[in-house]
Image (cartoon, rainbow, N blue to C red; front, top):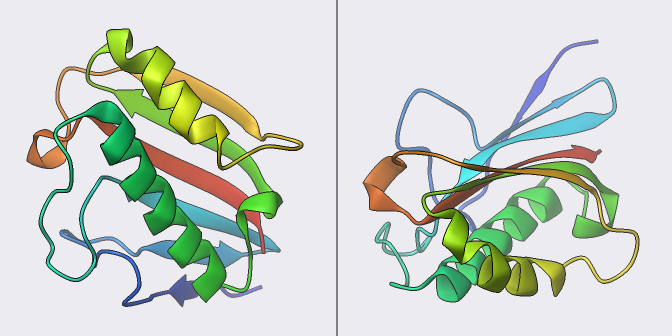
Length: 126
């Protein structure tokens, strides 16, 4: 089965040699999202809750462009610059997954693109 590139203007454009998402074999594999405003390409927010909200809205837009939704997400990986941000990130993140939340891994990393506080990638059902 061929793979299909997913692209939407409702989420930030790729800032490197990658696709926003790939649809393959009934699944969607979303590239990591940071808190870029899709209209301006600029970072949004100086705090983890604001950045988490923007990241989740970007993910939602890519999923919808592919004909999927947050309800079909099966796995997320959250990359935090500071694990001390886990609580407020988790609170905002949780507001997007009220029922049947996906599996998740959260790790602390040394640095993220554009000095973002977090990045999230997703696997979902197409």
